[in-house]
Image (cartoon, rainbow, N blue to C red; front, top):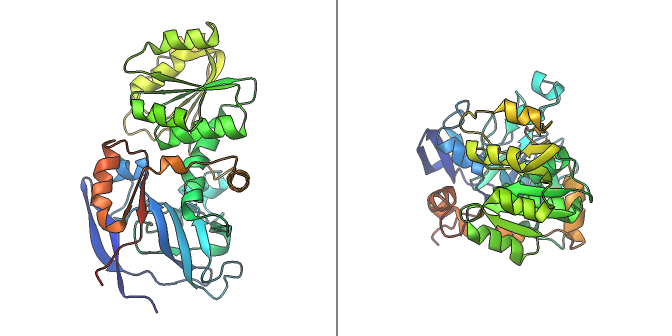
Length: 355
């Protein structure tokens, strides 16, 4: 029998969030499951949400959509997922019947949607309710742990989305602007899975560039704070510019840079969450015949990425630079949200109660 209350990070409105005592979720439909959160993470979009940059976000709302669980209870119609199983959970649940699902945007499902943003409560908590558990829980293979797989459904899947939109293949040189967790994921996917000819990481923070180099995730790095990016790109590409740019900064400066360094007829693929409007200089973009792609990922590539991890060909664990219990989550929002202490990803272990 589960306890009656639990700890959870609750968003109460712009700039107002706290670690609160809230009721433990209960099964309401026969296809539901309850999971004990074994590992969670803070996402950049969580930072945007608590700062008030997602005006449609309801409150109060438990935040979080990157997580693994141990299943502790299942509804009568859950067949594949059993209590005791360790699972990765998709960041969103969709009904398949609403207008958004039928239009190809299941992450914006009107019935469920993204954990912690739409109708569902989030995962930065001790327990979480998972609707349609058989469909949206992925059992973790016995020889892997949560750290091996937690980044698959969102960070790596977003990277996959950006790389696929960029039409990356072994003939193409790829630049990735902004190598936070999503940008790092794009570097890994472009190089390890899509076999890009060359991957170039661009960022202001030298520690992130060094981390990628140390783990052989890129072929070249450019510090945009100390180097002339356009000139360095010319050197690396013999004056042609990169074939594609994956942009994850989501601000005016990074988006403009992406359009400048991409060659004539190339692709700019953005995977950013935009918190402010941008101005597009269409005269310059038009004259280069650039294609611009963007959007929200749909969970593609998850099976392929899990297999690559099992084979030892994809390893994103180095991105989990910080790991603390749920007790310290407010510190996590400060450190991760303000890019302190070299933090790339703040992982959350279960709440530690006094004995």
